[in-house]
Length: 219
Image 1 (cartoon, rainbow, N blue to C red):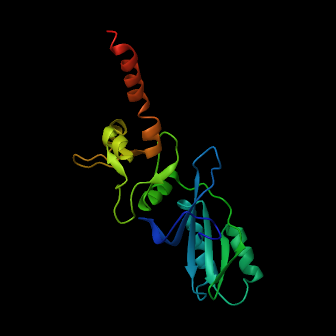
Image 2: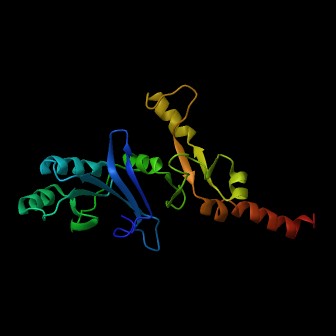
Image 3: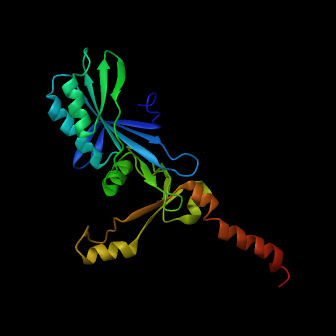
């Protein structure tokens, strides 16, 4: 995943509450003008599973992933019927032969459900910045949110961390509708990356310091 797809992060047996993929890879695709990323989900089989069943399982991962692949262990190439099935469903194929993996069929790009995709990425320790829309590390997979402060802007500025805050208005609206209701708890969390904290949230503070140094003494 890192060598062939140039993924900056990979993990095994991860997903959302409704299903897990054997391998997940994340890679940058945004070029110079955006922080867009792509999520790749791979289902790995030992070569003894019914091909159509395995293909259907793989296809289901496009609910939370942009590209989906079935990686099958086999000495012989995929049969023409299997290639046709994979092409019809819209999944990529990877042949595992010994320790070598070969991409046989390229996966098309999907637009996964945004809510499920963001949930998956948060499970992998990644969050989307509300300002620049880039994805950045929130913490380790085992220990979440160690790279962000909780609604403490000054602390985020001083420590070089990102910022996590909660959207009270959205949470209240959902609570009135009976969506994601919990006693004294708000789940609508948002993030700002450390770069935006350093470059944007400090602008007003620096402007005030500059203004005071120039005009403050005159008064």
